[in-house]
Structure formats: C-alpha cells, structure tokens
Length: 167
Image 1 (cartoon, one colour):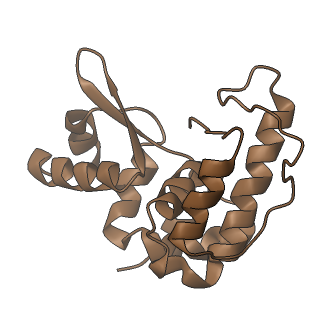
Image 2: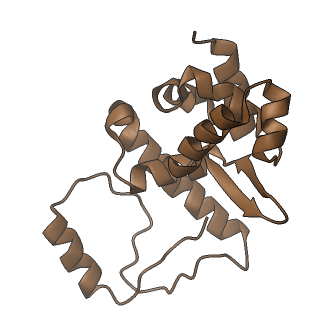
Image 3: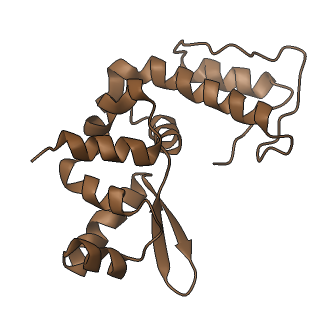
C-alpha cells in the first residue's frame, strides 16, 4: 500500500526539489521506500535485514534491484555496504540510460534541473571532478530538443572537446 508520508520522508533524504516529489512514486515502488529510507546511512544487507525484520534473501533481492537501477551506491570494505544516492544522481542515471518513459511529462524539467545543478556545482568547486576544456562555441544555456542519433554523433565527432561528469 502506498504511503505518501514514506515518499515525503524519502524525498527529504534524497534532497528532492519540491517540484519533483511527484516523480518518486513513478520510479520507486511502495515496497522499496522503507529500504531506501533505511539506507540514508551506509549499511550491509544483514544490518538492513535485521533493522527491517525481513529475511536476508528478500532484502538482498530488493537491494540488488535498487542498485542495478541506480538508486544505491555500493562500497566494499570488509563487507559490501550500500547507501542511497541523491535525487540528482538517481535522475541523472535514469535519464542517461533512456529510462524516461515513466517520467515522460517531467523530462524537460528534469533535464533543465540536471543542467542547472551541474553548472552550480562547477561554479562552486575550484577543483571539479569533471574536466571541462573551454571552447569558444561553448553553450551555457540548456537546449531542450531531441535530435536524431546520427546528428548527435556528428556533433560529438566535430567537437574540439567534450565534458564528462563523474558522480
């Protein structure tokens, strides 16, 4: 059963902008909210299983699914542990993998949000994780158009530099 309070708690943990809280029920199943909320702090599957009172095999299956879908980050120390990613990181992965169908009516706004947060992050960090090589024709305003794959490849091949962000 869907609980709006669970999605609100999850939105706060993910640092979801208020205008995108409605996106969460479209990409997160109700039975996954408790796991994501619990993983606001890094935990192993065993710890999570004990905390939620669920069998390890069930938790392991759900965590694997959430990890594969880009909701969790994984860290390997003595044991493998997981932590929920930010809304920005989740949406960036979601859209970059072409999984926009569930959030179709939000795609343009989400793409603009990703561009704005990328620019803010770059301006605020003198030592960014991404490497940006400036070119005179750099575009600073987001462009919300869809172009054929062949045209996109042509544009990329003719670029003097390409920026890639590591999340």
